[in-house]
Image (cartoon, rainbow, N blue to C red; front, side):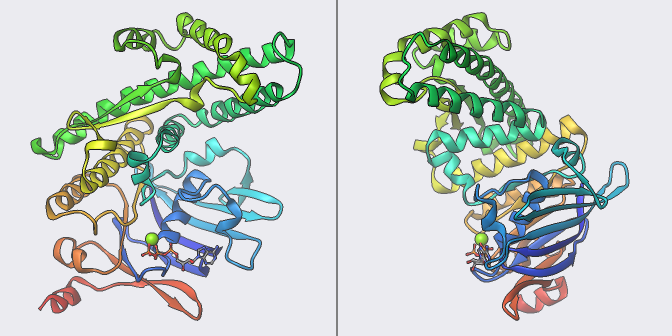
Amino acid sequence: MRIDRLTLRGFRNYRDMTVTFPAAGAYITGANGSGKTNLLEAMYFLANQTSFRTTKREELQGWGTTQCRVDALITAPETQRQSELAIALSPHGRRLLINGKATREAYKFATYFAAVAFHPGTLNVLKGGPAGRRLLIDRGIASLHPAFVQTSLDCQRALKQRNALLRSATGPGNPTLEVWTERFINVALQITAARQEHVTVMNQTLATLCKSLGTDIGLLTLAYRPAVLAHCTPEVSDLLLASLPHAPQLRERLYAEAQRLQRGEMALGQTLFGPQRDDIAIYYRGREARSSASQGEQRLSAFLLIAALALAIQQRHGHQPVVLLDDVVSELDERNRHIVFGFLQSHDFQVFITDIDHRIWSQHLRDFPSFQVRQHNGQAELRPGPTPQHARCDVC
Ligand SMILES: Nc1ncnc2c1ncn2[C@@H]1O[C@H](COP(=O)(O)OP(=O)(O)OP(=O)(O)O)[C@@H](O)[C@H]1O
Ligand SMILES: [Mg+2]
Protein backbone atom coordinates (compact mmCIF):
# COMPACT_ATOMS: atom_id res chain seq x y z
CA MET A 1 0.00 0.00 0.00
CA ARG A 2 1.16 3.48 -0.65
CA ILE A 3 -0.01 7.04 -0.29
CA ASP A 4 -0.02 8.78 -3.66
CA ARG A 5 -1.66 11.97 -2.49
CA LEU A 6 -2.36 13.40 0.95
CA THR A 7 -4.56 16.33 1.93
CA LEU A 8 -4.64 17.72 5.45
CA ARG A 9 -7.29 20.23 6.51
CA GLY A 10 -7.21 21.70 9.98
CA PHE A 11 -4.90 18.92 11.16
CA ARG A 12 -2.62 20.40 13.88
CA ASN A 13 -0.50 23.10 12.15
CA TYR A 14 -1.63 22.12 8.60
CA ARG A 15 -4.48 24.42 7.63
CA ASP A 16 -4.99 23.20 4.08
CA MET A 17 -2.27 21.31 2.30
CA THR A 18 -2.14 18.78 -0.51
CA VAL A 19 0.99 16.89 -1.47
CA THR A 20 1.75 14.16 -3.97
CA PHE A 21 4.23 11.51 -2.86
CA PRO A 22 6.46 9.22 -4.92
CA ALA A 23 5.98 5.44 -4.58
CA ALA A 24 9.20 5.09 -2.54
CA GLY A 25 8.06 7.62 0.08
CA ALA A 26 9.98 10.66 1.24
CA TYR A 27 12.83 11.91 3.41
CA ILE A 28 11.21 14.88 5.13
CA THR A 29 13.33 17.58 6.69
CA GLY A 30 12.35 20.69 8.60
CA ALA A 31 13.28 22.78 11.60
CA ASN A 32 12.15 21.87 15.11
CA GLY A 33 8.47 22.62 15.47
CA SER A 34 7.85 22.88 11.71
CA GLY A 35 5.34 20.00 11.43
CA LYS A 36 7.25 16.79 10.60
CA THR A 37 5.79 14.68 13.40
CA ASN A 38 2.34 16.15 12.73
CA LEU A 39 2.56 14.96 9.14
CA LEU A 40 3.47 11.38 10.09
CA GLU A 41 0.86 11.45 12.83
CA ALA A 42 -1.80 12.33 10.22
CA MET A 43 -0.84 9.30 8.10
CA TYR A 44 -0.83 7.04 11.15
CA PHE A 45 -4.19 8.45 12.24
CA LEU A 46 -5.72 7.65 8.88
CA ALA A 47 -4.52 4.05 9.08
CA ASN A 48 -5.17 3.34 12.74
CA GLN A 49 -7.84 5.90 13.71
CA THR A 50 -5.73 6.75 16.70
CA SER A 51 -2.71 8.97 17.19
CA PHE A 52 0.65 7.62 18.29
CA ARG A 53 1.09 10.49 20.73
CA THR A 54 -2.25 11.40 22.19
CA THR A 55 -5.48 9.72 23.15
CA LYS A 56 -7.33 13.05 23.00
CA ARG A 57 -8.69 13.42 19.48
CA GLU A 58 -9.45 17.13 19.90
CA GLU A 59 -5.69 17.78 20.15
CA LEU A 60 -5.43 16.83 16.48
CA GLN A 61 -7.67 19.69 15.40
CA GLY A 62 -5.83 22.89 14.55
CA TRP A 63 -5.94 25.39 17.38
CA GLY A 64 -9.11 27.45 17.22
CA THR A 65 -10.90 24.92 15.00
CA THR A 66 -13.39 22.20 15.88
CA GLN A 67 -12.83 19.94 12.91
CA CYS A 68 -10.09 18.35 10.93
CA ARG A 69 -9.81 15.99 8.03
CA VAL A 70 -7.19 13.73 6.45
CA ASP A 71 -7.77 12.59 2.85
CA ALA A 72 -5.53 10.26 0.91
CA LEU A 73 -5.38 8.56 -2.43
CA ILE A 74 -4.13 5.06 -1.63
CA THR A 75 -2.83 2.52 -4.10
CA ALA A 76 -2.51 -1.16 -3.33
CA PRO A 77 0.29 -2.18 -5.75
CA GLU A 78 -0.55 -5.88 -5.27
CA THR A 79 -4.01 -5.38 -6.84
CA GLN A 80 -3.53 -1.96 -8.50
CA ARG A 81 -6.65 -0.84 -6.60
CA GLN A 82 -6.82 2.91 -6.04
CA SER A 83 -9.05 4.26 -3.29
CA GLU A 84 -9.87 7.62 -1.75
CA LEU A 85 -9.85 7.31 2.02
CA ALA A 86 -10.75 9.98 4.52
CA ILE A 87 -11.05 10.39 8.25
CA ALA A 88 -12.82 13.47 9.60
CA LEU A 89 -13.29 14.75 13.14
CA SER A 90 -16.00 17.22 14.08
CA PRO A 91 -18.13 18.00 17.13
CA HIS A 92 -20.43 15.19 15.86
CA GLY A 93 -17.67 12.61 16.20
CA ARG A 94 -15.42 10.70 13.83
CA ARG A 95 -16.31 9.76 10.26
CA LEU A 96 -14.57 7.30 7.98
CA LEU A 97 -15.07 7.52 4.23
CA ILE A 98 -14.12 5.08 1.49
CA ASN A 99 -14.40 6.56 -1.99
CA GLY A 100 -16.67 9.30 -0.64
CA LYS A 101 -19.05 6.86 1.11
CA ALA A 102 -19.23 6.92 4.90
CA THR A 103 -18.59 3.62 6.64
CA ARG A 104 -18.81 2.56 10.25
CA GLU A 105 -16.75 -0.54 9.64
CA ALA A 106 -13.26 0.22 10.90
CA TYR A 107 -12.23 -3.37 10.00
CA LYS A 108 -13.14 -2.79 6.37
CA PHE A 109 -11.33 0.56 6.37
CA ALA A 110 -8.21 -1.18 7.70
CA THR A 111 -8.08 -3.40 4.62
CA TYR A 112 -7.47 -0.30 2.46
CA PHE A 113 -4.57 1.22 4.32
CA ALA A 114 -2.10 0.18 7.00
CA ALA A 115 0.80 2.04 8.59
CA VAL A 116 3.33 1.32 11.33
CA ALA A 117 5.30 4.04 13.08
CA PHE A 118 8.51 4.51 14.98
CA HIS A 119 8.34 7.77 16.92
CA PRO A 120 10.26 9.02 19.95
CA GLY A 121 7.48 7.68 22.19
CA THR A 122 8.33 4.15 20.98
CA LEU A 123 11.48 4.43 23.10
CA ASN A 124 9.33 4.63 26.23
CA VAL A 125 8.24 1.13 25.40
CA LEU A 126 11.72 -0.09 26.16
CA LYS A 127 12.60 2.31 28.94
CA GLY A 128 9.30 2.94 30.65
CA GLY A 129 6.70 0.96 32.57
CA PRO A 130 4.62 -2.00 31.36
CA ALA A 131 1.68 0.12 30.11
CA GLY A 132 3.65 1.26 27.03
CA ARG A 133 4.70 -2.30 26.22
CA ARG A 134 1.13 -3.57 26.58
CA LEU A 135 -0.05 -0.80 24.24
CA LEU A 136 2.60 -1.64 21.65
CA ILE A 137 1.69 -5.33 21.73
CA ASP A 138 -2.05 -4.66 21.69
CA ARG A 139 -1.75 -2.27 18.74
CA GLY A 140 0.37 -4.86 16.97
CA ILE A 141 -2.28 -7.53 17.56
CA ALA A 142 -4.97 -5.14 16.27
CA SER A 143 -3.08 -4.56 13.03
CA LEU A 144 -2.85 -8.31 12.46
CA HIS A 145 -6.30 -9.17 13.83
CA PRO A 146 -8.65 -6.15 13.65
CA ALA A 147 -11.31 -7.97 15.74
CA PHE A 148 -8.95 -7.63 18.70
CA VAL A 149 -9.96 -3.96 19.02
CA GLN A 150 -13.41 -5.14 20.13
CA THR A 151 -11.92 -7.72 22.54
CA SER A 152 -9.81 -4.99 24.07
CA LEU A 153 -12.85 -2.69 24.43
CA ASP A 154 -14.84 -5.55 25.99
CA CYS A 155 -12.05 -6.07 28.50
CA GLN A 156 -11.94 -2.38 29.40
CA ARG A 157 -15.72 -2.36 29.84
CA ALA A 158 -15.71 -5.45 32.06
CA LEU A 159 -12.89 -3.97 34.12
CA LYS A 160 -14.72 -0.66 34.54
CA GLN A 161 -17.95 -2.39 35.58
CA ARG A 162 -16.12 -4.64 38.01
CA ASN A 163 -14.25 -1.70 39.54
CA ALA A 164 -17.51 0.23 39.94
CA LEU A 165 -19.05 -2.76 41.75
CA LEU A 166 -16.00 -3.12 43.97
CA ARG A 167 -16.38 0.54 44.93
CA SER A 168 -20.06 0.13 45.75
CA ALA A 169 -20.78 -0.98 49.28
CA THR A 170 -22.42 -4.33 48.41
CA GLY A 171 -19.39 -6.46 49.34
CA PRO A 172 -18.33 -10.03 48.51
CA GLY A 173 -20.95 -12.56 47.54
CA ASN A 174 -22.77 -9.94 45.48
CA PRO A 175 -24.18 -11.93 42.52
CA THR A 176 -23.68 -9.00 40.12
CA LEU A 177 -20.03 -8.86 41.07
CA GLU A 178 -19.76 -12.59 40.41
CA VAL A 179 -21.28 -12.16 36.96
CA TRP A 180 -18.80 -9.41 36.10
CA THR A 181 -15.90 -11.41 37.53
CA GLU A 182 -16.82 -14.24 35.18
CA ARG A 183 -17.14 -11.90 32.20
CA PHE A 184 -13.85 -10.25 33.04
CA ILE A 185 -12.07 -13.62 33.34
CA ASN A 186 -13.52 -14.79 30.00
CA VAL A 187 -12.22 -11.75 28.15
CA ALA A 188 -8.96 -11.75 30.15
CA LEU A 189 -8.26 -15.23 28.79
CA GLN A 190 -8.87 -14.04 25.23
CA ILE A 191 -6.45 -11.14 25.73
CA THR A 192 -3.85 -13.47 27.27
CA ALA A 193 -4.16 -15.90 24.35
CA ALA A 194 -3.86 -13.09 21.77
CA ARG A 195 -0.79 -11.60 23.49
CA GLN A 196 0.89 -14.98 23.76
CA GLU A 197 0.25 -15.72 20.08
CA HIS A 198 1.51 -12.27 19.06
CA VAL A 199 4.71 -12.64 21.07
CA THR A 200 5.35 -15.99 19.34
CA VAL A 201 4.75 -14.47 15.87
CA MET A 202 6.95 -11.46 16.66
CA ASN A 203 9.78 -13.67 17.95
CA GLN A 204 9.75 -15.71 14.76
CA THR A 205 9.71 -12.56 12.61
CA LEU A 206 12.41 -10.85 14.70
CA ALA A 207 14.68 -13.90 14.43
CA THR A 208 14.45 -13.89 10.62
CA LEU A 209 14.80 -10.11 10.46
CA CYS A 210 17.84 -9.87 12.76
CA LYS A 211 19.54 -12.68 10.85
CA SER A 212 18.88 -10.99 7.52
CA LEU A 213 20.39 -7.71 8.73
CA GLY A 214 23.74 -9.20 9.70
CA THR A 215 25.10 -11.77 12.10
CA ASP A 216 26.58 -9.22 14.53
CA ILE A 217 23.32 -7.35 15.08
CA GLY A 218 22.30 -9.70 17.90
CA LEU A 219 18.89 -11.06 18.66
CA LEU A 220 15.88 -9.17 19.92
CA THR A 221 13.25 -11.31 21.65
CA LEU A 222 10.05 -10.78 23.59
CA ALA A 223 8.84 -12.71 26.62
CA TYR A 224 5.24 -12.44 27.71
CA ARG A 225 4.80 -12.08 31.47
CA PRO A 226 1.13 -12.33 32.39
CA ALA A 227 0.48 -11.03 35.91
CA VAL A 228 -1.53 -14.16 36.75
CA LEU A 229 1.63 -16.26 36.33
CA ALA A 230 3.89 -13.92 38.28
CA HIS A 231 4.47 -16.47 41.05
CA CYS A 232 4.94 -19.51 38.79
CA THR A 233 8.23 -21.10 37.82
CA PRO A 234 9.18 -20.49 34.16
CA GLU A 235 8.40 -24.16 33.41
CA VAL A 236 4.86 -24.01 34.84
CA SER A 237 4.31 -20.65 33.18
CA ASP A 238 5.37 -22.04 29.77
CA LEU A 239 3.13 -25.06 30.24
CA LEU A 240 0.08 -22.98 31.08
CA LEU A 241 0.67 -20.55 28.21
CA ALA A 242 1.07 -23.48 25.82
CA SER A 243 -2.41 -24.68 26.83
CA LEU A 244 -4.06 -21.47 25.55
CA PRO A 245 -6.60 -20.55 24.23
CA HIS A 246 -8.77 -22.90 26.39
CA ALA A 247 -6.39 -23.24 29.31
CA PRO A 248 -8.73 -24.49 32.09
CA GLN A 249 -5.90 -24.29 34.62
CA LEU A 250 -5.24 -20.67 33.73
CA ARG A 251 -8.94 -19.94 34.20
CA GLU A 252 -8.78 -21.60 37.62
CA ARG A 253 -5.79 -19.48 38.49
CA LEU A 254 -7.64 -16.30 37.57
CA TYR A 255 -10.56 -17.35 39.81
CA ALA A 256 -8.09 -18.16 42.58
CA GLU A 257 -6.55 -14.69 42.18
CA ALA A 258 -10.01 -13.10 42.37
CA GLN A 259 -10.57 -14.98 45.63
CA ARG A 260 -7.15 -14.29 47.09
CA LEU A 261 -7.22 -10.56 46.32
CA GLN A 262 -10.85 -9.96 47.21
CA ARG A 263 -10.19 -8.13 50.47
CA GLY A 264 -7.65 -5.77 48.89
CA GLU A 265 -9.90 -5.19 45.89
CA MET A 266 -12.80 -4.18 48.15
CA ALA A 267 -10.54 -1.86 50.12
CA LEU A 268 -9.13 -0.19 47.02
CA GLY A 269 -12.21 -0.41 44.82
CA GLN A 270 -10.03 -1.76 42.05
CA THR A 271 -9.44 -5.05 40.22
CA LEU A 272 -6.03 -6.32 41.22
CA PHE A 273 -5.60 -9.17 38.75
CA GLY A 274 -5.92 -9.50 34.98
CA PRO A 275 -4.29 -8.43 31.71
CA GLN A 276 -4.16 -4.74 32.69
CA ARG A 277 -1.27 -5.79 34.95
CA ASP A 278 0.68 -7.90 32.40
CA ASP A 279 4.16 -7.06 31.16
CA ILE A 280 6.18 -8.00 28.10
CA ALA A 281 9.93 -8.22 28.64
CA ILE A 282 12.16 -7.20 25.75
CA TYR A 283 15.57 -8.84 25.53
CA TYR A 284 18.42 -7.56 23.41
CA ARG A 285 21.40 -9.91 23.08
CA GLY A 286 19.92 -12.03 25.88
CA ARG A 287 19.66 -9.21 28.44
CA GLU A 288 16.63 -7.18 29.37
CA ALA A 289 16.82 -4.10 27.15
CA ARG A 290 15.15 -1.87 29.71
CA SER A 291 18.08 -2.03 32.11
CA SER A 292 20.98 -3.16 29.93
CA ALA A 293 20.69 -1.71 26.43
CA SER A 294 22.42 1.59 25.62
CA GLN A 295 20.40 4.54 24.24
CA GLY A 296 21.39 3.67 20.68
CA GLU A 297 20.64 -0.02 21.21
CA GLN A 298 17.24 0.86 22.64
CA ARG A 299 16.53 3.03 19.60
CA LEU A 300 17.63 0.26 17.25
CA SER A 301 15.56 -2.28 19.19
CA ALA A 302 12.48 -0.05 18.95
CA PHE A 303 13.07 0.27 15.20
CA LEU A 304 13.41 -3.53 14.87
CA LEU A 305 10.10 -4.03 16.68
CA ILE A 306 8.38 -1.72 14.19
CA ALA A 307 10.14 -3.30 11.21
CA ALA A 308 9.14 -6.78 12.41
CA LEU A 309 5.54 -5.65 12.79
CA ALA A 310 5.57 -4.33 9.19
CA LEU A 311 6.81 -7.74 8.01
CA ALA A 312 4.26 -9.60 10.12
CA ILE A 313 1.45 -7.47 8.62
CA GLN A 314 2.75 -8.22 5.15
CA GLN A 315 2.92 -11.95 5.92
CA ARG A 316 -0.58 -12.09 7.38
CA HIS A 317 -2.51 -9.78 5.06
CA GLY A 318 -0.42 -9.89 1.90
CA HIS A 319 -0.17 -6.11 1.76
CA GLN A 320 2.62 -3.83 2.83
CA PRO A 321 1.99 -1.18 5.44
CA VAL A 322 3.49 2.27 5.01
CA VAL A 323 6.50 2.65 7.35
CA LEU A 324 6.73 5.93 9.26
CA LEU A 325 10.06 6.72 10.94
CA ASP A 326 10.00 9.88 13.00
CA ASP A 327 13.39 11.01 14.33
CA VAL A 328 14.96 7.58 14.13
CA VAL A 329 18.11 8.04 12.06
CA SER A 330 19.66 11.22 13.43
CA GLU A 331 20.31 9.63 16.82
CA LEU A 332 21.92 6.45 15.49
CA ASP A 333 25.61 5.88 14.75
CA GLU A 334 26.79 4.98 11.25
CA ARG A 335 26.59 1.23 11.80
CA ASN A 336 23.04 1.30 13.12
CA ARG A 337 21.98 3.74 10.41
CA HIS A 338 23.21 1.23 7.86
CA ILE A 339 21.07 -1.43 9.52
CA VAL A 340 18.00 0.80 9.15
CA PHE A 341 18.79 1.76 5.55
CA GLY A 342 19.69 -1.87 4.75
CA PHE A 343 16.22 -2.92 5.90
CA LEU A 344 14.56 -0.18 3.84
CA GLN A 345 16.56 -0.99 0.74
CA SER A 346 15.91 -4.72 0.93
CA HIS A 347 12.13 -4.27 1.23
CA ASP A 348 9.56 -2.53 -0.86
CA PHE A 349 7.71 -0.54 1.76
CA GLN A 350 6.76 3.06 1.11
CA VAL A 351 8.75 4.86 3.81
CA PHE A 352 8.56 8.33 5.33
CA ILE A 353 11.58 9.42 7.36
CA THR A 354 11.89 12.71 9.23
CA ASP A 355 15.06 14.57 10.12
CA ILE A 356 15.96 18.16 10.93
CA ASP A 357 18.23 18.59 7.90
CA HIS A 358 19.28 16.64 4.81
CA ARG A 359 22.88 15.85 5.81
CA ILE A 360 22.22 12.16 6.36
CA TRP A 361 20.07 12.06 3.25
CA SER A 362 22.88 13.55 1.16
CA GLN A 363 25.38 11.01 2.55
CA HIS A 364 23.27 7.86 2.25
CA LEU A 365 19.99 8.35 0.45
CA ARG A 366 20.44 10.83 -2.38
CA ASP A 367 18.29 8.79 -4.71
CA PHE A 368 15.44 8.81 -2.24
CA PRO A 369 12.89 11.62 -2.82
CA SER A 370 13.29 14.49 -0.39
CA PHE A 371 10.78 17.03 0.91
CA GLN A 372 10.95 19.99 3.26
CA VAL A 373 8.39 21.24 5.72
CA ARG A 374 8.21 25.01 5.96
CA GLN A 375 6.04 27.57 7.61
CA HIS A 376 4.23 29.70 5.05
CA ASN A 377 1.63 32.32 5.98
CA GLY A 378 1.40 30.84 9.46
CA GLN A 379 0.77 27.27 8.37
CA ALA A 380 2.93 24.26 7.57
CA GLU A 381 3.57 23.36 3.96
CA LEU A 382 5.44 20.59 2.26
CA ARG A 383 7.67 21.35 -0.72
CA PRO A 384 10.05 19.18 -2.73
CA GLY A 385 13.49 19.15 -1.10
CA PRO A 386 16.95 19.07 -2.65
CA THR A 387 17.57 16.88 -5.66
CA PRO A 388 20.62 14.55 -5.87
CA GLN A 389 22.28 17.19 -8.09
CA HIS A 390 21.67 19.88 -5.52
CA ALA A 391 22.93 17.65 -2.71
CA ARG A 392 26.29 17.18 -4.43
CA CYS A 393 26.72 20.95 -4.54
CA ASP A 394 25.84 21.16 -0.83
CA VAL A 395 28.51 18.66 0.04
CA CYS A 396 31.24 20.31 -2.10
N1 LIG B 1 -3.51 21.21 17.48
C1 LIG B 1 -2.53 21.99 16.99
N2 LIG B 1 -2.82 23.07 16.20
C2 LIG B 1 -1.85 23.86 15.69
N3 LIG B 1 -0.54 23.65 15.92
C3 LIG B 1 -0.20 22.61 16.68
C4 LIG B 1 -1.16 21.74 17.26
N4 LIG B 1 -0.53 20.80 17.97
C5 LIG B 1 0.78 21.07 17.86
N5 LIG B 1 0.98 22.15 17.10
C6 LIG B 1 2.25 22.79 16.72
O1 LIG B 1 2.74 22.17 15.56
C7 LIG B 1 4.13 22.47 15.48
C8 LIG B 1 4.85 21.34 14.81
O2 LIG B 1 4.88 20.23 15.66
P1 LIG B 1 5.67 18.91 15.26
O3 LIG B 1 5.67 18.04 16.47
O4 LIG B 1 5.13 18.33 14.03
O5 LIG B 1 7.11 19.50 14.98
P2 LIG B 1 8.39 18.75 14.38
O6 LIG B 1 8.66 19.31 13.04
O7 LIG B 1 8.20 17.29 14.48
O8 LIG B 1 9.51 19.25 15.39
P3 LIG B 1 10.75 18.49 16.08
O9 LIG B 1 11.87 18.52 15.09
O10 LIG B 1 11.04 19.33 17.27
O11 LIG B 1 10.31 17.12 16.43
C9 LIG B 1 4.58 22.77 16.90
O12 LIG B 1 5.05 24.10 16.96
C10 LIG B 1 3.38 22.57 17.74
O13 LIG B 1 3.27 23.51 18.78
MG1 LIG C 1 9.01 15.82 15.67
